Length: 138
Image (tube, rainbow, N blue to C red; front, top):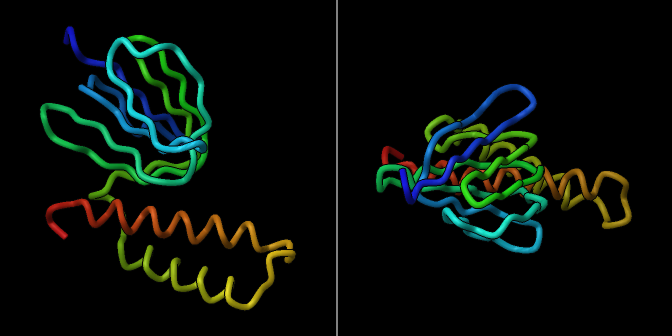
């Protein structure tokens, strides 16, 4: 545990993950960033995307929604709207959501009040699909 980092992924509904990891990669709003034990303390906004971490030399993937990450030298706490582990994502449902969002975006202009909601829905669907495809059994 000397080189391990405590990671907690928390959503409003549950603790999605809590345990020691070797490293974590987070989709920040200003770009993806990695954290190892001993990292400088920081606070970052988290963007829709793919979060992953290494535990026991194995990568684990989560599709995440927006939120915040608090980093200290030995702990990372992710407070996030949603987090789905790759093996728990319904890829058929995610593909339908992607198709629906693309169809709705094709029918509206950027100044439409629903444009940003649909853009975010499309980004979430794409993140869920790419995360689910990381699962070896798919």
